[in-house]
Structures are given as structure tokens and as C-alpha cells.
Length: 164
Image (cartoon, rainbow, N blue to C red; front, top):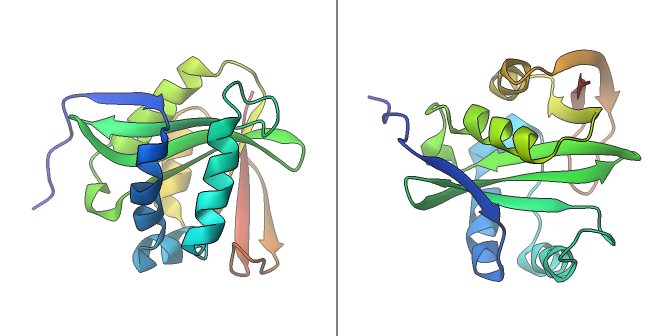
């Protein structure tokens, strides 16, 4: 039986104490299969987060990092970051919290905080739940293309969405 939707969802700036937990979320095999991604090793992950967290106002990295807190528990992350020269939103929810409406609500909160448009997002073509989250928040699909394998992603169809 699915767990009920949380009563309270909040975003807060990602802190150094969150990084280990976020890495644990990224190591989940089912999450990576759905997202079409590959987990980073701890040293690479930590180094990137040290860079992001040191950039308090986001001027060097362009990243606006937030953790998602549901009923007092960190359950994922949502970030705005530059991707292909455009502002893009991305998020990751711990698998044990899938299907509870958390991603949709967290994306909505982030959109309220980050008003600059257009805002883009990408999702693996087979990741219908993620595409649905974005569409619920007003994004529309603008393209589908094959993405070559990279250090961070598997070869996959990628859907690009925009919120104008």
C-alpha cells in the first residue's frame, strides 16, 4: 500500500550536512535506471557539491540548490542549473518516497522561488513519471532526441521541456 502524501513539503538551501545523503539517493539502481543516469563516485560527487556550496550566491556555478523536506525529513533535491547555456530545473526523489506527490509539489515550490523564464528541463524518454511532474507544473515538450552516452548518462532518448 502506498504511503500517504506528506502534510508539509518545504525547500531549503542545501547544506554540507546533506551531501552524504544526497549521494546515497544517487546510488540507487532503480532511480538511475528510470532517469537514464549513472551514479558518480563519492569523491566526484563531493567535489562538485563543495564547489556549489562554496558559491553562496550562485554567480560562479549558476546553481540554485535546494533539498526537499517532507514532514521534517530530507527526501530529495531540486536544483536550477545551467545546461546547454539555459536555465534548467532538475530533481531527484529518494525511491522510497516515489508516488507521494512530492516531486510535483517540490517543483512547484521551486518555480515560485525562481521566476526567470524560460526554464528548461530534460527527462529520459522512458521516464513518464518525471515528464508528468513537469507537465503538471506547466512545462511542455519541445523536442525528443537521442542522447549519446556520457560519463553521467546512458545512451537514451531525451525529452526536452520548457516553461515559458
